[in-house]
Length: 192
Ligand code: PA5
Ligand code: NI
Image (tube, rainbow, N blue to C red; front, side, top):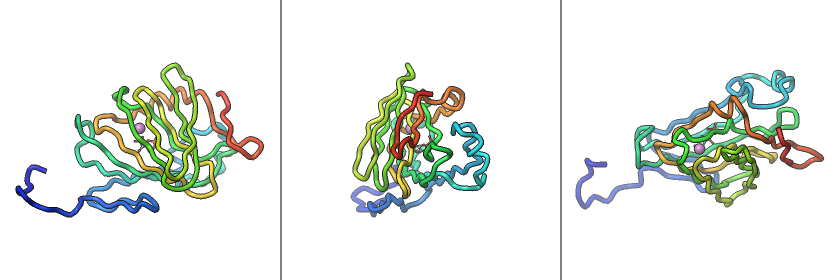
């Protein structure tokens, strides 16, 4: 940014398709999570073991305009979670606290329907409904996981500080204190 000429009028660096959140621009990263990357996340291990290990469960597309860990910058991303269940549990992200725990984040719904699962440091867990246009402020010290409860892709956007980092360890070890399951045909939170 410091090699830009005074009085320049430039094209935008990135473009977003508002219908599906697709980001166009340079230096995008595109991590993909398959069944084989999600061991220990779902409760029903028998149902999990029957799934094709190369099946894609969710994918992220993100703009990292500054280096990971840089203080004062922002990252921007889009996540697609495909529809489906492992046993009676919907497809979902791994979920995390931030490495710098006080860092907050915004999520917003773009397509499909789902749930944002939130848990504080006292392991109190609750959820917010996600739908196109829903906007979610995730405060610092709150673990967050997204879940596709619908029949089509759940697509949502996110914006977070470039020094937030992702701490997956705590969720891998202790999980969330509740799971979202389909019970009597609708999503319900169950203590775990
Ligand atoms: O930064 C975020 O919170 C999101 O971009 C998530 O990383 C994304 O939704 C994937 O979830 P997870 O990082 O828990 O695998
Ligand atoms: Ni986050």
